[in-house]
Amino acid sequence: MSVPSLLGFAQNAGRLVAGRAAAMRAVDAGRVHLLVVANDASDRLQRQVNEGAEARQVPILKWGTKAELGTAVGKRDLGVVAVCDTGFAGALMREVGRHVAATGEKGLGDVYV
Image 1 (cartoon, helix red, strand yellow):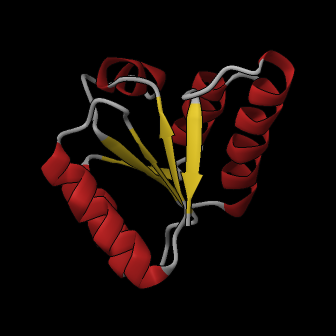
Image 2: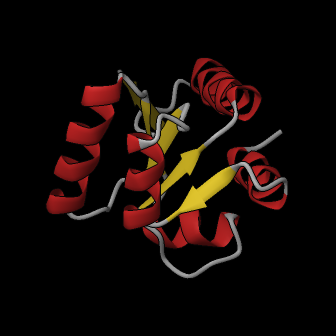
């Protein structure tokens, strides 16, 4: 299953929080299992996400563009989404790992903890 499909399913299941403010509130509440940040997100947004994720030890997956991330969850351009479900978080990380292993493509998704 593709990353956009998994993100869409997570959104439809109510297990995804979209946008910087909402994602950071969810991180602070301890509800987030994975943050997905667009590769073209602003430096300021990336710093904020990194600081919040580091404080709560939430992994970060860098994937796609803001347009691709927004489209995947049925919204306009998004710099970050928070995945609030361990199953979806694991599936997203496995899918990115499978794709990179199969294609050798770099930069599709980098996971940071």
